[in-house]
Length: 382
Image (tube, rainbow, N blue to C red; front, side, top):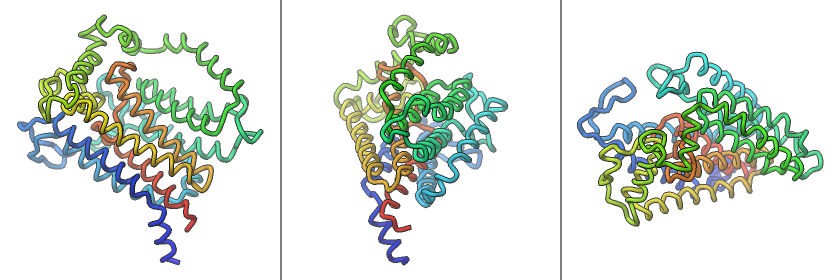
């Protein structure tokens, strides 16, 4: 029996998927070393000890990556049945954490998004994305469309409420970008199953009707970010500063870039948030169009293998989990790159596996581990 199980694991393990999942964050470490280069500062590793290293962002991200690989292994070992059984518990825990953030979360740059545990900041919104993916997969797999092919409008009420509740809590922090990405993931899972054209038109009409009141609910700085997208030069030192500096960095990289650690926008610190939201701009400035296409190619290789795993999954729940995690990573990549090149408003979405951040890294690596687990279990060895 043990030999058969071992062979099932090896046959189901997707080595190509793992290769893409490791190569992308390794490329991120290379970019972060340059983006966070400061040889005159010692690196304080989470308040435990100091290390002499020229890039704090790179070293800390490396520790997050190592932790992420462990988390990935743990996620691979979780049985699909357990994920299905505890989906609502994880969703409820995520809601509790989001409520806790609203009550006594840590305020950073005017936003209350983090919970602090012994000097380590945790962003519950990142983990809520996994909660909504698992919950939507459970609900949609257990309640398929009554006509067998696509949902009617009345059948979308419960899934819609499950998506709207965490979106509202996250938007209140305020974190409009994460709220929108969470909504995109949940809606994409519904569309993957199928929605009747009349129901889809009704939803689109409702969104258009609610657009104006939603605009009025946005903070002033959020409205300015959207308006400045149409005309960045209208406020070049205010709301348009991020987009303007980012576009300068991206454009100045040209075909092959200025060279490693030679990017003036980055090294002279004209480019804001260059280790987090605008890390792609650092890549574009130093490695040029070729470097950008290479990284985007790695991401599309990752997406292709994830979709292949979703298509081969052995049940509807596993398929929806794999597809939901694919949609999550894809949405983040599109929003972040669109943001830094001026096609989308600045909404504070990091580039998955590349931008500096522990919560994002651990959350995504856990999700990739779940997808690998779906691949392993398609052989029905357990």
